[in-house]
Length: 461
Ligand SMILES: Cc1cc2nc3c(=O)[nH]c(=O)nc-3n(C[C@H](O)[C@H](O)[C@H](O)COP(=O)(O)OP(=O)(O)OC[C@H]3O[C@@H](n4cnc5c(N)ncnc54)[C@H](O)[C@@H]3O)c2cc1C
Image (cartoon, rainbow, N blue to C red; front, side, top):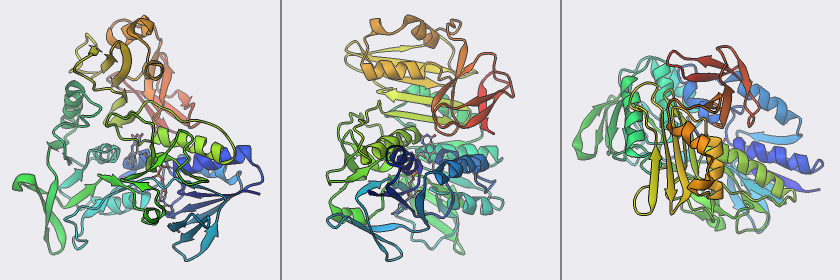
């Protein structure tokens, strides 16, 4: 009987456990999770700000599915050391556990600010449910809320704060939001949308110092010496992996564990998946290898391979998220420009409501990247084009016209990102407020609502 061990019960770990059980019904599966909270979909964390609760349906469904898999769960305990020669791990409780196959799926966490010595209150690092609960408990007393970072987390947090009626300032270290995936047009549409929502965006600076009054944060000092009022600071980036035990094992590369297409590390019987895994083969063009859908798929593949499968992971690096009310999908070299690159964009007024912007990049005649903002209807098809490296002539002309001509519609559906896994779903055109749809990836049900601006919005039911 095989003994499988999974470090981290996030989405990658959970999908892996499911996949192992599908191939091996007698193996022993042990899952070790540092947190005590039940499972929740991390991309929903920001939406829970101010509510301080889990998304009940999301955790309930998942608990039910997991309880059928006969897994040994160890929660509130972290893995401290990996002794790969002995095929054992050391837990924070001092217990030493043996394994035959190990999956490292421990995700990332936000790196602490260098200027934070831990002696000032009002500074939070946004990673887990406990952070949301802590932020929610102090939110009512705060006048100036600052969010730092250009991550998925920061976008989720400013949206959550906005929906909770809290104005915030977002500081990002780059001169443009996500320059590796957004072109200047998309970035400026997003900046407008943030401004319209009352979010002040400060670009191109990092936090240098923190000023406190009686131990409570009052101001932050950024590059150049400017002071910004802040009695609550939520830090969301940069992301790092913190499992020091891995360093001695020889597995860690800077900020991640290298894996092959089968998600195997260089050490026999050790696999890695999700945010912590870095594909050796990936041509990422600077796009971070992070994200919920990616972790979901990798978890499944790693689990299957741990139990004897032969699956291979390959994808087009992508960013899938929601910024305020705008769904965003960036595929491959979505911001490509320069020599040999031909770019197509729409003929519509993208700087007005409903703020739809799409971009397609061909390099040396082949589809290499695409960007969908505000409507993601064709993202699934175009993802395939990029994977296959189709030429412009091989791409379906109706799909291209759908993307770029405002009044041309051959697809009688709307694109919408699943609010949990960010998979691009298609919703029938006649979908009215109240229709319930099921995400084909997470299998969860969502209620569709048509907003005043015509955009569709989905909420977990
Ligand atoms: C607010 C927010 C918004 C987001 N929005 C988006 C989005 O819009 N789109 C998108 O694609 N992605 C988004 N993400 C990122 C997405 O959630 C991650 O990419 C995804 O969760 C990665 O899954 P994972 O299983 O690799 O890691 P995780 O979900 O991080 O799970 C890892 C688990 O391992 C546990 N762990 C860590 N170290 C140890 C240890 N030593 N021992 C035991 N357990 C350990 C952790 O407690 C954690 O539960 C968002 C994340 C946040 C926080």
